[in-house]
Image (cartoon, rainbow, N blue to C red; front, side):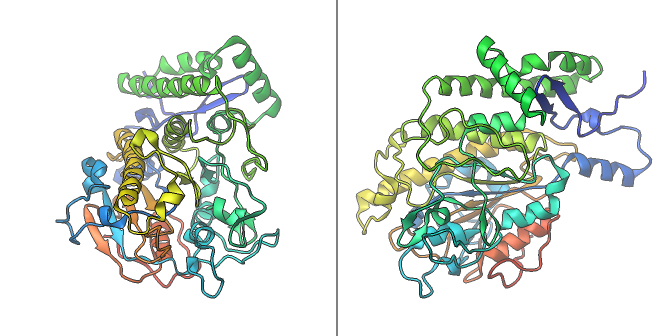
Length: 465
Protein backbone atom coordinates (compact mmCIF):
# COMPACT_ATOMS: atom_id res chain seq x y z
CA UNK A 1 0.00 0.00 0.00
CA UNK A 2 1.52 3.32 -1.05
CA UNK A 3 2.00 6.06 1.51
CA UNK A 4 -0.71 8.74 1.56
CA UNK A 5 0.82 12.19 1.33
CA UNK A 6 -1.61 15.05 1.94
CA UNK A 7 -1.12 18.63 0.86
CA UNK A 8 -0.96 21.15 3.69
CA UNK A 9 -3.83 22.90 1.88
CA UNK A 10 -6.18 19.89 1.87
CA UNK A 11 -9.76 20.90 2.70
CA UNK A 12 -12.93 19.10 3.67
CA UNK A 13 -15.51 20.48 1.26
CA UNK A 14 -19.28 20.57 1.08
CA UNK A 15 -22.07 22.99 0.25
CA UNK A 16 -20.76 26.46 1.08
CA UNK A 17 -18.08 24.93 3.28
CA UNK A 18 -14.32 24.50 3.19
CA UNK A 19 -12.77 23.24 6.43
CA UNK A 20 -8.98 23.47 6.56
CA UNK A 21 -7.22 20.57 8.27
CA UNK A 22 -4.82 20.69 11.20
CA UNK A 23 -1.26 19.48 10.68
CA UNK A 24 -1.31 15.69 10.20
CA UNK A 25 1.57 13.23 10.02
CA UNK A 26 0.34 12.34 6.55
CA UNK A 27 1.36 15.80 5.39
CA UNK A 28 5.02 14.90 6.00
CA UNK A 29 6.21 11.98 3.84
CA UNK A 30 8.37 9.53 5.75
CA UNK A 31 10.53 8.72 2.73
CA UNK A 32 12.42 11.89 1.89
CA UNK A 33 15.63 12.42 0.04
CA UNK A 34 17.88 13.31 2.96
CA UNK A 35 17.82 15.45 6.07
CA UNK A 36 17.64 18.75 4.18
CA UNK A 37 14.40 17.79 2.42
CA UNK A 38 12.92 16.50 5.65
CA UNK A 39 13.77 19.74 7.44
CA UNK A 40 12.19 21.79 4.67
CA UNK A 41 9.00 19.70 4.76
CA UNK A 42 8.71 20.08 8.53
CA UNK A 43 9.11 23.83 8.26
CA UNK A 44 6.18 23.98 5.85
CA UNK A 45 3.97 22.06 8.30
CA UNK A 46 5.15 24.02 11.35
CA UNK A 47 4.85 27.67 10.33
CA UNK A 48 5.75 30.55 12.62
CA UNK A 49 2.87 32.72 13.75
CA UNK A 50 2.68 36.10 15.43
CA UNK A 51 -0.06 37.71 17.52
CA UNK A 52 -0.68 40.71 19.72
CA UNK A 53 -3.14 40.52 22.62
CA UNK A 54 -4.04 43.83 24.23
CA UNK A 55 -5.65 44.85 27.52
CA UNK A 56 -6.83 48.43 28.14
CA UNK A 57 -6.67 50.95 30.98
CA UNK A 58 -3.27 49.95 32.30
CA UNK A 59 -2.31 47.47 35.01
CA UNK A 60 -1.92 47.35 38.78
CA UNK A 61 1.85 47.33 38.45
CA UNK A 62 2.67 46.38 42.05
CA UNK A 63 1.00 43.02 41.50
CA UNK A 64 2.45 42.65 38.01
CA UNK A 65 6.18 43.39 38.06
CA UNK A 66 8.55 40.71 39.42
CA UNK A 67 11.07 41.95 41.98
CA UNK A 68 14.08 40.28 40.37
CA UNK A 69 15.35 40.16 36.81
CA UNK A 70 16.88 37.15 35.12
CA UNK A 71 15.79 33.51 35.17
CA UNK A 72 15.41 33.20 38.95
CA UNK A 73 12.52 35.65 39.25
CA UNK A 74 9.29 34.69 41.00
CA UNK A 75 5.88 35.11 39.43
CA UNK A 76 3.78 37.86 40.96
CA UNK A 77 0.16 37.27 42.05
CA UNK A 78 -1.23 38.58 38.75
CA UNK A 79 1.08 36.38 36.67
CA UNK A 80 0.71 33.23 38.77
CA UNK A 81 -1.84 31.61 36.40
CA UNK A 82 0.98 31.37 33.84
CA UNK A 83 3.15 29.18 36.09
CA UNK A 84 2.75 26.02 33.92
CA UNK A 85 4.31 27.89 30.99
CA UNK A 86 7.06 29.80 32.81
CA UNK A 87 9.79 28.39 30.57
CA UNK A 88 7.84 29.44 27.45
CA UNK A 89 7.43 33.15 28.11
CA UNK A 90 9.33 36.15 29.42
CA UNK A 91 8.24 39.19 31.38
CA UNK A 92 9.57 42.26 29.60
CA UNK A 93 9.92 45.52 31.55
CA UNK A 94 11.10 49.03 30.79
CA UNK A 95 9.71 49.44 27.26
CA UNK A 96 8.24 52.82 26.28
CA UNK A 97 5.49 53.94 23.90
CA UNK A 98 6.54 57.58 23.60
CA UNK A 99 3.99 58.41 20.90
CA UNK A 100 1.22 57.68 23.40
CA UNK A 101 2.51 60.62 25.46
CA UNK A 102 0.96 64.08 24.86
CA UNK A 103 4.03 65.50 23.10
CA UNK A 104 2.21 68.83 22.97
CA UNK A 105 -1.22 67.42 22.11
CA UNK A 106 -2.79 67.64 25.58
CA UNK A 107 -5.23 65.06 27.02
CA UNK A 108 -6.17 61.86 25.20
CA UNK A 109 -3.89 59.20 26.66
CA UNK A 110 -6.32 56.33 26.07
CA UNK A 111 -6.75 57.07 22.36
CA UNK A 112 -3.01 57.46 21.94
CA UNK A 113 -2.23 54.32 23.98
CA UNK A 114 -4.16 51.98 21.71
CA UNK A 115 -3.37 53.67 18.41
CA UNK A 116 0.36 54.17 19.01
CA UNK A 117 0.91 50.72 20.56
CA UNK A 118 1.57 48.80 17.33
CA UNK A 119 2.39 51.79 15.12
CA UNK A 120 4.90 53.77 17.19
CA UNK A 121 3.34 56.86 15.64
CA UNK A 122 1.65 59.93 17.16
CA UNK A 123 -1.99 60.04 16.02
CA UNK A 124 -3.22 63.27 14.49
CA UNK A 125 -5.58 64.86 17.00
CA UNK A 126 -8.85 65.03 15.13
CA UNK A 127 -12.48 64.09 15.66
CA UNK A 128 -13.15 63.99 11.94
CA UNK A 129 -12.37 61.77 8.99
CA UNK A 130 -8.87 63.18 8.45
CA UNK A 131 -7.23 60.41 10.47
CA UNK A 132 -3.49 60.06 10.33
CA UNK A 133 -1.35 57.50 12.12
CA UNK A 134 0.92 54.81 10.63
CA UNK A 135 1.02 51.19 9.56
CA UNK A 136 0.89 48.80 12.51
CA UNK A 137 3.26 45.90 13.19
CA UNK A 138 0.64 43.25 12.42
CA UNK A 139 -0.10 44.73 9.01
CA UNK A 140 3.61 45.00 8.29
CA UNK A 141 3.81 41.26 9.04
CA UNK A 142 0.75 40.57 6.87
CA UNK A 143 2.40 42.40 3.97
CA UNK A 144 5.31 39.95 4.16
CA UNK A 145 3.70 36.61 5.05
CA UNK A 146 -0.03 37.14 4.53
CA UNK A 147 0.05 35.67 1.03
CA UNK A 148 0.95 32.28 2.49
CA UNK A 149 -2.47 31.80 4.11
CA UNK A 150 -6.12 32.24 3.26
CA UNK A 151 -6.42 35.31 5.49
CA UNK A 152 -3.54 37.79 5.37
CA UNK A 153 -4.44 38.65 8.97
CA UNK A 154 -7.37 38.34 11.35
CA UNK A 155 -8.50 41.13 13.63
CA UNK A 156 -10.42 39.77 16.61
CA UNK A 157 -12.28 41.98 19.05
CA UNK A 158 -14.58 41.81 22.04
CA UNK A 159 -15.99 45.34 22.27
CA UNK A 160 -17.28 46.84 19.06
CA UNK A 161 -16.67 50.54 19.45
CA UNK A 162 -17.58 53.31 17.05
CA UNK A 163 -15.22 54.37 14.29
CA UNK A 164 -16.57 57.91 14.03
CA UNK A 165 -17.18 60.70 16.50
CA UNK A 166 -15.26 61.89 19.54
CA UNK A 167 -14.21 59.39 22.18
CA UNK A 168 -11.25 60.81 24.10
CA UNK A 169 -10.45 64.52 24.52
CA UNK A 170 -10.68 65.51 20.88
CA UNK A 171 -9.54 62.21 19.34
CA UNK A 172 -11.67 60.23 16.91
CA UNK A 173 -13.19 57.02 18.26
CA UNK A 174 -11.19 55.15 15.60
CA UNK A 175 -8.04 55.72 17.66
CA UNK A 176 -9.53 54.36 20.91
CA UNK A 177 -11.17 51.34 19.31
CA UNK A 178 -8.66 50.19 16.70
CA UNK A 179 -5.26 48.60 17.23
CA UNK A 180 -4.55 47.51 13.64
CA UNK A 181 -3.83 50.05 10.86
CA UNK A 182 -3.43 49.09 7.21
CA UNK A 183 -1.89 52.46 6.39
CA UNK A 184 -1.56 55.89 7.99
CA UNK A 185 -5.17 56.69 7.10
CA UNK A 186 -6.86 53.26 7.14
CA UNK A 187 -7.83 51.54 10.41
CA UNK A 188 -8.61 47.82 10.16
CA UNK A 189 -11.92 47.31 11.91
CA UNK A 190 -11.91 44.31 14.24
CA UNK A 191 -14.55 41.59 14.00
CA UNK A 192 -16.34 41.24 17.33
CA UNK A 193 -18.85 38.57 16.34
CA UNK A 194 -17.90 34.94 17.03
CA UNK A 195 -20.48 33.81 14.49
CA UNK A 196 -19.09 36.11 11.83
CA UNK A 197 -15.56 34.84 12.39
CA UNK A 198 -16.73 31.21 12.43
CA UNK A 199 -18.59 31.67 9.13
CA UNK A 200 -15.63 33.46 7.53
CA UNK A 201 -13.19 30.74 8.63
CA UNK A 202 -15.25 27.88 7.23
CA UNK A 203 -16.85 29.44 4.15
CA UNK A 204 -15.83 28.17 0.70
CA UNK A 205 -15.60 31.60 -0.91
CA UNK A 206 -18.90 31.39 -2.80
CA UNK A 207 -21.29 33.93 -1.19
CA UNK A 208 -24.43 32.29 -2.63
CA UNK A 209 -23.45 28.81 -1.43
CA UNK A 210 -22.41 30.17 1.95
CA UNK A 211 -25.78 31.89 2.38
CA UNK A 212 -27.61 28.69 1.36
CA UNK A 213 -25.55 26.65 3.80
CA UNK A 214 -26.32 29.05 6.63
CA UNK A 215 -30.05 28.94 5.85
CA UNK A 216 -30.09 25.11 5.80
CA UNK A 217 -28.11 24.85 9.02
CA UNK A 218 -30.39 27.26 10.84
CA UNK A 219 -33.60 25.81 9.43
CA UNK A 220 -32.71 22.18 10.13
CA UNK A 221 -30.47 22.74 13.15
CA UNK A 222 -27.59 21.04 11.40
CA UNK A 223 -23.88 21.29 12.03
CA UNK A 224 -21.46 22.64 9.48
CA UNK A 225 -19.78 19.22 9.79
CA UNK A 226 -22.88 17.54 8.34
CA UNK A 227 -22.05 19.11 4.97
CA UNK A 228 -18.51 17.69 4.82
CA UNK A 229 -19.13 14.18 6.22
CA UNK A 230 -18.65 12.42 2.90
CA UNK A 231 -15.34 14.15 2.34
CA UNK A 232 -14.25 13.43 5.92
CA UNK A 233 -15.13 9.71 5.74
CA UNK A 234 -13.32 9.37 2.41
CA UNK A 235 -10.19 10.92 3.87
CA UNK A 236 -10.22 9.02 7.16
CA UNK A 237 -10.14 5.64 5.40
CA UNK A 238 -6.53 6.31 4.42
CA UNK A 239 -5.27 7.99 7.61
CA UNK A 240 -3.06 6.45 10.25
CA UNK A 241 -4.49 5.78 13.70
CA UNK A 242 -2.70 8.83 15.10
CA UNK A 243 -4.02 11.10 12.35
CA UNK A 244 -7.54 9.77 12.86
CA UNK A 245 -7.29 10.75 16.53
CA UNK A 246 -6.08 14.22 15.59
CA UNK A 247 -8.93 14.60 13.11
CA UNK A 248 -11.50 13.46 15.64
CA UNK A 249 -10.23 15.89 18.27
CA UNK A 250 -10.20 18.72 15.75
CA UNK A 251 -13.70 18.11 14.39
CA UNK A 252 -15.00 17.71 17.94
CA UNK A 253 -13.55 21.11 18.88
CA UNK A 254 -15.30 22.69 15.88
CA UNK A 255 -18.59 21.12 16.89
CA UNK A 256 -18.20 22.26 20.51
CA UNK A 257 -17.67 25.85 19.37
CA UNK A 258 -20.68 25.58 17.07
CA UNK A 259 -22.88 24.39 19.94
CA UNK A 260 -21.73 27.27 22.13
CA UNK A 261 -22.42 29.71 19.31
CA UNK A 262 -25.95 28.37 19.07
CA UNK A 263 -26.46 28.74 22.80
CA UNK A 264 -25.21 32.32 22.70
CA UNK A 265 -27.38 33.14 19.69
CA UNK A 266 -30.46 32.04 21.62
CA UNK A 267 -30.21 35.32 23.53
CA UNK A 268 -28.57 37.71 21.04
CA UNK A 269 -27.39 41.18 21.96
CA UNK A 270 -28.19 44.24 19.83
CA UNK A 271 -25.68 45.71 17.41
CA UNK A 272 -24.76 49.18 18.74
CA UNK A 273 -25.38 52.28 16.64
CA UNK A 274 -22.42 53.10 14.44
CA UNK A 275 -21.14 49.51 14.25
CA UNK A 276 -19.38 48.69 11.00
CA UNK A 277 -18.54 45.47 9.24
CA UNK A 278 -15.12 43.83 9.46
CA UNK A 279 -12.41 44.58 6.94
CA UNK A 280 -12.85 42.91 3.57
CA UNK A 281 -9.14 42.77 2.74
CA UNK A 282 -9.49 39.00 2.41
CA UNK A 283 -12.80 39.34 0.51
CA UNK A 284 -14.52 36.93 2.88
CA UNK A 285 -16.23 39.29 5.34
CA UNK A 286 -19.15 37.55 7.01
CA UNK A 287 -22.46 38.80 8.36
CA UNK A 288 -22.91 40.00 11.88
CA UNK A 289 -25.21 37.64 13.70
CA UNK A 290 -24.90 36.85 17.40
CA UNK A 291 -25.42 40.53 18.03
CA UNK A 292 -21.98 41.68 16.93
CA UNK A 293 -20.50 43.19 20.07
CA UNK A 294 -20.36 41.91 23.58
CA UNK A 295 -22.23 43.37 26.53
CA UNK A 296 -21.32 43.51 30.20
CA UNK A 297 -23.41 40.40 30.82
CA UNK A 298 -22.17 38.09 28.06
CA UNK A 299 -18.45 38.94 28.14
CA UNK A 300 -17.76 35.80 30.17
CA UNK A 301 -19.28 33.71 27.32
CA UNK A 302 -18.04 35.83 24.43
CA UNK A 303 -14.33 36.02 25.31
CA UNK A 304 -13.68 32.23 25.60
CA UNK A 305 -15.50 31.66 22.28
CA UNK A 306 -13.26 34.16 20.55
CA UNK A 307 -10.17 32.67 22.16
CA UNK A 308 -11.10 29.20 20.89
CA UNK A 309 -11.52 30.63 17.38
CA UNK A 310 -8.10 32.25 17.76
CA UNK A 311 -6.62 28.81 18.45
CA UNK A 312 -8.44 27.25 15.48
CA UNK A 313 -7.18 29.96 13.15
CA UNK A 314 -3.57 29.12 14.04
CA UNK A 315 -4.17 25.36 14.17
CA UNK A 316 -5.51 25.28 10.61
CA UNK A 317 -2.98 27.81 9.28
CA UNK A 318 -5.79 30.04 8.02
CA UNK A 319 -3.67 32.99 9.11
CA UNK A 320 -0.32 33.57 10.78
CA UNK A 321 -1.07 37.11 11.97
CA UNK A 322 -3.68 38.01 14.62
CA UNK A 323 -4.55 41.01 16.78
CA UNK A 324 -6.82 40.50 19.78
CA UNK A 325 -7.80 43.31 22.19
CA UNK A 326 -9.58 41.93 25.25
CA UNK A 327 -11.44 45.26 25.42
CA UNK A 328 -11.08 48.79 24.09
CA UNK A 329 -9.44 51.71 25.84
CA UNK A 330 -11.74 53.41 28.36
CA UNK A 331 -13.74 50.19 28.59
CA UNK A 332 -16.06 50.14 31.59
CA UNK A 333 -16.71 46.41 31.36
CA UNK A 334 -17.49 44.92 34.76
CA UNK A 335 -16.13 41.58 35.98
CA UNK A 336 -18.53 40.29 38.62
CA UNK A 337 -17.49 36.67 38.00
CA UNK A 338 -13.89 37.65 38.84
CA UNK A 339 -14.90 39.36 42.09
CA UNK A 340 -14.66 42.82 40.52
CA UNK A 341 -18.18 44.08 39.85
CA UNK A 342 -16.86 47.56 39.10
CA UNK A 343 -16.42 49.68 35.98
CA UNK A 344 -12.93 48.94 34.67
CA UNK A 345 -11.92 52.38 33.40
CA UNK A 346 -13.40 54.31 36.28
CA UNK A 347 -11.73 52.04 38.80
CA UNK A 348 -8.37 52.28 37.03
CA UNK A 349 -8.30 55.90 38.25
CA UNK A 350 -7.79 54.59 41.76
CA UNK A 351 -6.08 57.67 43.23
CA UNK A 352 -4.11 55.36 45.51
CA UNK A 353 -7.24 53.81 47.03
CA UNK A 354 -6.21 50.25 48.08
CA UNK A 355 -9.74 48.91 47.56
CA UNK A 356 -9.81 50.13 43.95
CA UNK A 357 -6.31 48.86 43.30
CA UNK A 358 -7.39 45.45 44.57
CA UNK A 359 -10.28 45.47 42.07
CA UNK A 360 -7.93 46.35 39.21
CA UNK A 361 -5.61 43.52 40.27
CA UNK A 362 -8.55 41.09 40.11
CA UNK A 363 -9.45 42.26 36.60
CA UNK A 364 -5.81 41.94 35.52
CA UNK A 365 -5.59 38.44 36.94
CA UNK A 366 -8.83 37.39 35.23
CA UNK A 367 -7.42 38.49 31.87
CA UNK A 368 -4.19 36.59 32.56
CA UNK A 369 -6.23 33.50 33.41
CA UNK A 370 -7.83 33.74 29.96
CA UNK A 371 -4.37 34.07 28.46
CA UNK A 372 -3.32 30.91 30.31
CA UNK A 373 -6.38 29.16 28.83
CA UNK A 374 -5.16 30.02 25.32
CA UNK A 375 -1.57 28.98 26.06
CA UNK A 376 -2.71 25.60 27.37
CA UNK A 377 -4.60 24.93 24.15
CA UNK A 378 -1.81 26.13 21.88
CA UNK A 379 0.76 24.10 23.79
CA UNK A 380 -1.33 20.93 23.58
CA UNK A 381 -1.36 20.93 19.77
CA UNK A 382 1.86 19.31 18.58
CA UNK A 383 3.40 19.92 15.18
CA UNK A 384 5.74 18.05 12.90
CA UNK A 385 8.93 19.66 14.20
CA UNK A 386 8.31 18.18 17.64
CA UNK A 387 7.14 21.45 19.15
CA UNK A 388 3.67 22.83 19.80
CA UNK A 389 1.88 25.73 18.15
CA UNK A 390 2.96 27.80 21.16
CA UNK A 391 6.58 26.80 20.56
CA UNK A 392 6.27 27.93 16.95
CA UNK A 393 4.58 31.25 17.74
CA UNK A 394 5.41 34.63 19.21
CA UNK A 395 2.59 36.31 21.11
CA UNK A 396 2.87 39.70 22.79
CA UNK A 397 0.47 40.48 25.63
CA UNK A 398 0.26 43.89 27.25
CA UNK A 399 -1.10 47.41 27.33
CA UNK A 400 -0.24 50.84 25.95
CA UNK A 401 -0.76 52.23 29.45
CA UNK A 402 1.29 51.27 32.47
CA UNK A 403 -0.44 52.50 35.65
CA UNK A 404 -3.97 53.44 34.61
CA UNK A 405 -4.18 56.09 37.29
CA UNK A 406 -1.09 57.94 36.05
CA UNK A 407 -1.67 57.38 32.34
CA UNK A 408 2.06 56.80 31.91
CA UNK A 409 3.42 55.04 28.87
CA UNK A 410 6.84 53.99 30.13
CA UNK A 411 7.70 50.66 31.77
CA UNK A 412 4.81 49.09 29.89
CA UNK A 413 3.45 45.76 31.21
CA UNK A 414 4.57 43.30 28.53
CA UNK A 415 4.78 39.55 28.13
CA UNK A 416 6.48 37.76 25.24
CA UNK A 417 5.03 34.27 24.89
CA UNK A 418 6.15 31.34 22.75
CA UNK A 419 9.53 30.39 21.35
CA UNK A 420 9.28 31.56 17.75
CA UNK A 421 10.31 28.17 16.43
CA UNK A 422 13.26 28.00 18.81
CA UNK A 423 14.55 31.51 18.10
CA UNK A 424 13.56 32.99 21.47
CA UNK A 425 14.47 31.93 25.00
CA UNK A 426 11.83 32.01 27.74
CA UNK A 427 11.73 31.78 31.51
CA UNK A 428 13.14 35.24 32.22
CA UNK A 429 12.30 38.69 33.46
CA UNK A 430 14.13 41.08 31.13
CA UNK A 431 14.48 44.86 31.50
CA UNK A 432 15.04 46.99 28.41
CA UNK A 433 14.93 50.30 30.23
CA UNK A 434 13.81 53.19 28.05
CA UNK A 435 13.77 51.36 24.70
CA UNK A 436 10.81 51.85 22.32
CA UNK A 437 8.33 49.00 22.34
CA UNK A 438 8.53 49.08 18.55
CA UNK A 439 12.04 47.60 18.93
CA UNK A 440 10.35 44.50 20.34
CA UNK A 441 7.93 44.40 17.41
CA UNK A 442 10.84 44.53 14.93
CA UNK A 443 12.56 41.70 16.79
CA UNK A 444 9.40 39.60 16.63
CA UNK A 445 8.90 40.29 12.94
CA UNK A 446 12.46 39.15 12.22
CA UNK A 447 11.75 35.77 13.79
CA UNK A 448 8.53 35.04 11.91
CA UNK A 449 9.94 35.77 8.48
CA UNK A 450 8.66 39.33 8.12
CA UNK A 451 11.71 41.57 8.64
CA UNK A 452 11.24 45.33 8.50
CA UNK A 453 13.85 48.07 8.47
CA UNK A 454 11.92 50.46 10.68
CA UNK A 455 8.55 50.79 12.39
CA UNK A 456 7.34 54.11 13.76
CA UNK A 457 9.79 55.36 16.39
CA UNK A 458 11.88 52.18 16.46
CA UNK A 459 15.63 52.59 17.05
CA UNK A 460 16.91 49.02 16.65
CA UNK A 461 16.39 45.43 17.73
CA UNK A 462 16.24 43.63 21.07
CA UNK A 463 18.20 40.50 21.84
CA UNK A 464 15.69 37.80 22.69
CA UNK A 465 18.00 34.77 22.98
